[in-house]
Image (cartoon, rainbow, N blue to C red; front, side, top):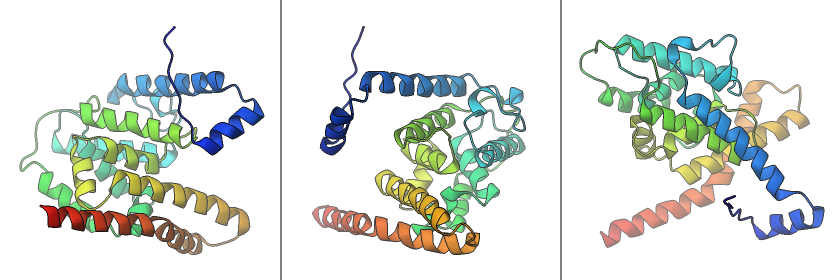
Length: 245
């Protein structure tokens, strides 16, 4: 049986050793779940999707993520695209309008208007004649990567924030190109997502009656504090690269 090495941070490795957690069994179960989800995405046929009563690939996706998929499919169909692309997934995210991914991007000073303008520049001049039945290869890869991102964060669901990370991580799709060009570096965005999720959980527990707007403001501040040092280091590095070039 082939072996897969798993590398852990020193503090976590020591804690695992002290607790006696069966690493092999835990990793195997997590890998099995991730493989099943990725395989389900690859086998998904859009005409068979039931977004109201999710099965298969949609079981672990949140209601907002399923809405994004529906809107992406509708956009691809309106354009006559042969398949749903990453640009349609990002367009669906923008059309849904209330998801955490957009809030994270806003804290990174990436606006919806910027993304829409960038996507419009990639939109075909004339509508095609196709009817999308599947996700295109780049969109499927982005969805697969969103499962990987969710799994790496220890989440048993796939939300729009995970889809955002999947779109950025996918190297060849239009959405990733647009997001990266606007400053959505994968490592920076991953930190922002983690900070936002931790902030929501903590603030909701501390102030269960708080208005959503108040929570959003507080979490936005927390995210900006988290990513500011990393963003500054990235800016210094880019400036040095510019000088060297």
